[in-house]
Image 1 (cartoon, rainbow over the protein chains, first blue to last red):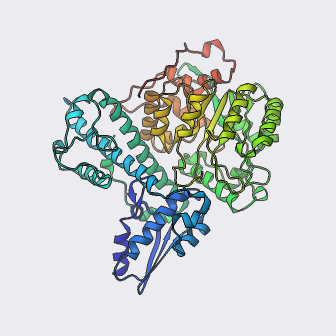
Image 2 (tube, each protein chain N blue to C red; image 1 turned 60 degrees about the horizontal axis):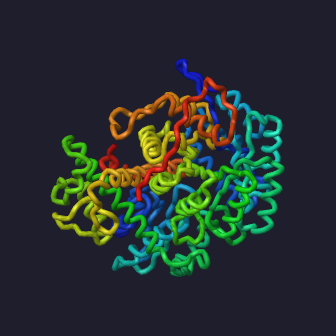
Image 3 (cartoon, each protein chain N blue to C red; image 1 turned 30 degrees about the horizontal axis):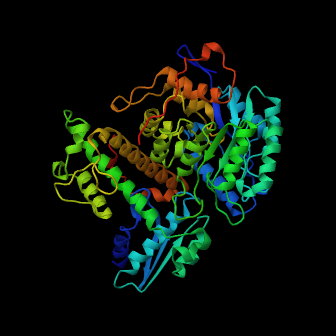
Length: 238
Length: 337
């Protein structure tokens, strides 16, 4: 029961780059509970996955599990990574990002997190708009300039977009335009096709990386295949 | 040369390596982790018929390379793009002497590019001048995430790196191949960030910057830069094998590159020995954008010819028989600002 509870809480930990829960990606190798102590082992597709993302996911895991009211101690261990020793020492000591990496870290990870939240929003925006274009062949790309959130169907691509907008603090009112920049500002009408095109390349990148990382994880850890939840086919329609 | 359906293609494999990752050459655990990561790439993206054993993968030697590329792989010319990785391998990962000796024996088939590391400052700059003369360098391969002492990488626009790039201009080294990898410092930035390429491409317009694996996993940032900088090119290392495992994704990569760059700035490579060229060349010639992807135009035979060899041949002044050429068009930057 408590393991289920902890695993459910772990769903809130996202790979920032792939914009998916690490549980669905198969990155959680094991999660065990003994009384009020939770131990999580994480595994990644390669030894050389970016250490900053690795740290970010591991420390997020520690945070969400520590937040459970029955939990007293949490151990998060990153397995088989080139920086495993460093990261695991930092996590055990609650040393924080800068305390863990020392000189290699200059600021904190907020800016990095923001970059990838913005990419996730851009990709979600493209998915919603491309879906609209495919369903209504009369609709031109330029006309997307006038599409507002109210014009989007009650569909999970729309819900996903609203979540990404909320995460960035962007307007989620029905009257808000859909195609906007990272700050919620609409683009000039003549730029719409180019901006949609760019958003598409962001979406292709994220979806492509997600598939590659999932595949590499299965190659590295064949047993991870059963832990992976298929990536939502709808969101990478094309 | 590869021939299919009466069409001939001149093939340049623009990114190959002759590496030694055997345990006796591994300096530490990271040497093993690195080659294991390569081997997982190989296993994950290769057709089953093309899989190598782990032992073969650790070290394959010059004779095997010649066979895989030129006898079996249809390649007319290949370019060594070595990674030194001195922090992981005692005698380096890319085998300089062996590769250069092979190049000297087969100058019509092989070009040797070397690497430099701007963190070696003046000593490395002096070495670059000696290397340029000894190897007759037309290009270099830079791995910005390479570890050195406590450093986990550098940026192309670091002051010392700029001095190296200026030396390249002076020494006639025109082709700068750049590979981005994780762990570059400082860690609070995106390790794969390609923004430094934008800066140096703007400042050194007489240099070509070939971004390996077309900026993946940051395809969009790469495309945005490349569309504005006519001297930025896409290398297809690592992207190519998706043609087998995920052809629709491959179609999107090619489609995006053709949209944001153009057909003159995309170069084929197998990234040998990550993969072998034979099946990649065969598949690429047979490849077409799926019909339902109406956002992309179908690939033409001439576009395939350019990507498979003519673009890299032009960059490296390789002699291509007249009948294998297509009419070249001028490259223009698209303004997106």
